[in-house]
Amino acid sequence: MVRLVLFDIDETMISSNGAGRRAIGRMLSKTFGIDPREIKVSMSGKTDPQILAEIFKAADLDESQMTGKQEEMFEFYLSVLQEEVNKANRYIMHDGVVALLECLLTKEKCYLGLLTGNIERGARIKLERFGLNKYFPLGAYGSDSHDRMHLPAIATDRATEHYQVNFAPSQVVIIGDSIYDVMCAKGYGAKSIAVNTGSTSLSDLEEQKPDFLFTSLANTDEVVEAIFS
Image: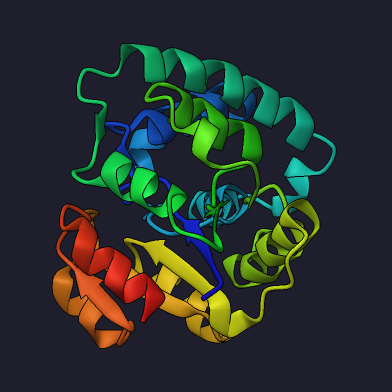
């Protein structure tokens, strides 16, 4: 039974103690003089470009001001993200992550990838502290599209090329902690597995009617059964 299992990163596999938010804040302060303390934008489940667009709107700035500056902005963001990750005092991996990944590696015709709103290099920085990059040879990222709904198709195309396997949407499983993970899975026709390890409430996740909902990934057998059901 073929499965392509796509994992979100933040609050699904790890918690970076706000490293990404602080790095974005430092970048906005340096580049545009925006005080990040005055901007209240939820980042859960969103792509990095989407977050920036929402911050600009909240700050009454024109998005056109980002034109031509995105490469510079993200280069600075990545440099300070590494600093923030290195000094984060509560940088954790959620229960059951490695056990689940190791178990899936033993399953015939099971393939792994990422689906995350992080730009690709940011995703790799966040995963590297726990040595998780080795599990994910490919993925779809916020640097591919600002719209998370586009990412399942991108990840599946890359997986088809890398693994030399044709994956139907029904053979794709998306695991994440936010309503947007569930929504993009449903929009693509993939199976959705929600995990209540992030800031999204259990009731909000339930409202999206994921195919499966777990409080954590700690019960490997139950999660694997859901993936292959």
